[in-house]
Image (cartoon, rainbow, N blue to C red; front, top):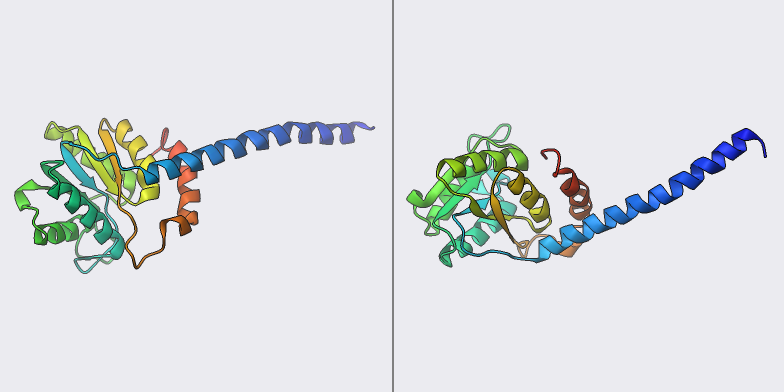
Length: 202
């Protein structure tokens, strides 16, 4: 066998076990994301942090409404004294996601004095980092983080990086939206993003 052929087979012999390791790590990450999506760790904390989502002229989108309804239910259980709503203003919008959330939760019984706003973040990491800074200013550290199920693992990783003690509480999809187990695209994306959140902001 000449040298080019030997080099080819040696490279394949190296790449195959590498591919096995990468595939195993990816499936392990996917399983962990799914585990976090199915577990609700909500218990008494300093604040409930609601991750933002789209709003339309001050009215929460179905995704944001599901998160807010879940947070309101946690509030009604008396699990936290404060609710921090996140989410900045999208391109072309006049109202931030946090402000739309504020109007909604106040209409459902949460007093304005209990609400904190983070209305600058455009990504999950930006919103959660700013939320952490605000909470630290109030000497608060333990939080219940509310978002979509497949976001939970990444948000817990980011929250710990930002000095919070996060408890994840997924807001299940509304009846009119896709079923959780049909959202495989989101699961795949989060299985890639979550491990990287240990090192970078997403």
